[in-house]
Length: 269
Ligand code: BGC
Image 1: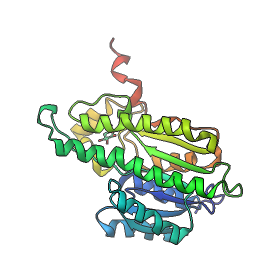
Image 2: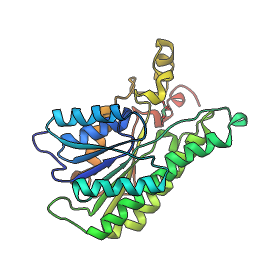
Image 3: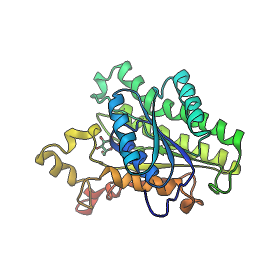
Image 4: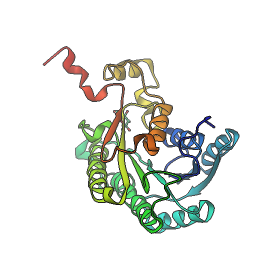
């Protein structure tokens, strides 16, 4: 636990928190004093391991299963969360996946799975969180904002990505979901922002870093010349959920070592 926890007494739900970026975000929010729901859809043992890590650090967490693209399961998960922690202050819409394919070979099932989980899943969870924020209203001793939503987007909300058209489309959609929600909900003191990670070393992109050749090729896209660590995103999420960022809403914060600076243009164009 951090000595001056920024999120003391707040309750957070992190979707897809049993691995990768979600796991780091869950651990980071808990280290800053939040009660954390570690959502997962498969591999309960991994979710339990995240809960165990949080408890070993002196934090508080439970694991809850739900497929974020399933409305009934999402609603049930939020009800379970309220039984355990009473309410929600912070939602981190993190669950996401890739189903890569050349465009002409992409199946409707690959398209729909990615849109359903990455985009519709964020809508379903955000809607439940907003219902509770509005029902409960502000709690000034916990936070200046009535609620905070952080959407896990990607550099691919702005960088087109051939071979991954379904994924890039989902992230472009998240950008407008986030901005439109932020515009509508700011008067209610609900802040909505996105994090745009670049290449972070997690299971989703193993092929991009697991051999020296792949890693060297990846690094040509990253001016800062290192792959991202899940903790880079975890630390940012804790800050974006806290009152230190209270005047920030409707923004994507890229955390990408400069990937969105289009490094190919430093020696060309
Ligand atoms: C993708 C990763 C990729 C990174 C940078 C992320 O959104 O999930 O597979 O390495 O963007 O291209």
